[in-house]
Length: 334
View 1 (spheres, rainbow, N blue to C red):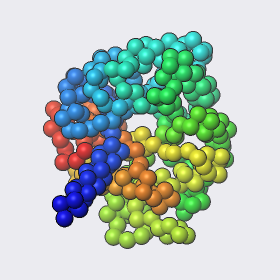
View 2 (cartoon, rainbow, N blue to C red; view 1 turned 90 degrees about the vertical axis):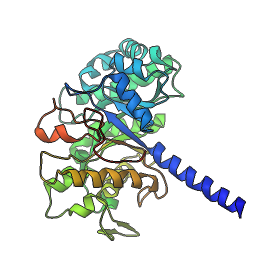
View 3 (cartoon, rainbow, N blue to C red; view 1 turned 60 degrees about the vertical axis):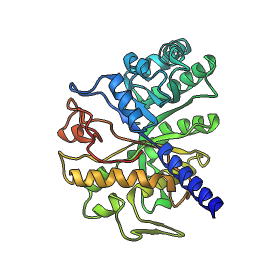
View 4 (spheres, rainbow, N blue to C red; view 1 turned 30 degrees about the horizontal axis):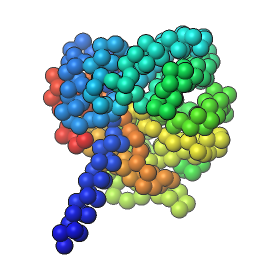
């Protein structure tokens, strides 16, 4: 009996560890009332948040992260794509200054080269693929290839067919943009980074998308799809992207959810209770996988650590899971 109890305890501990390891939090800094980087790192550690996404290589943040043991997704912001795409030397300098000089004190996990670049953007869209290539080469040049994956973060607006999930496909007019990126990621065995917001799907179409479906609270299957059934919109959106990748030569790719969240104020359906429900259920759900990839934990980054009062419009100010004074909005378990 004692041995059986020990085995059950070890299994429970392993499941809890897997769940907590699947969830990180995005550290946005567009506020004039936020804690210092060192205070933020202390908050992450005290709450057992072991992964962080940061959007800009701010030196004070990287210095505060040193020795913290927090795994980091570091962004090459869209404003710096031109610099790293223009030459290998520039990319090597960027990686040296922002990654190599802080390693191994900072545990870099990913470099996210660009965030939600629109394929229709004539300036930025043409830069993403060469920037990816140069940054990946620079990571290898500095001896970090085995430690750090290079990718880019996209959103669900690239999808043209989204129902049912098994029929997911990219829009025809984004294929020239996304196909080379998919081929590159397949070649270097890096995941695609995807920002998923069930909130915007629900708020934009509440007639066809129910609130329980968006909040993980539907009592049963809402969308049947062959052998699979979808009880929540998060899984459906993720599997739509997996289906689109399969049709575009990316069947081998994993997806990391680089942002997902729900606002507590400022718009339709944006309430404290809805946001609490979404974040709580998301954290509990991601260890389970999706109907297409059952049992495979979904690495997910909650958006965001704090309310950011310098963002616009009003809705964007209210995605924090903590208030700027470090009080938690919700009792989330990491």
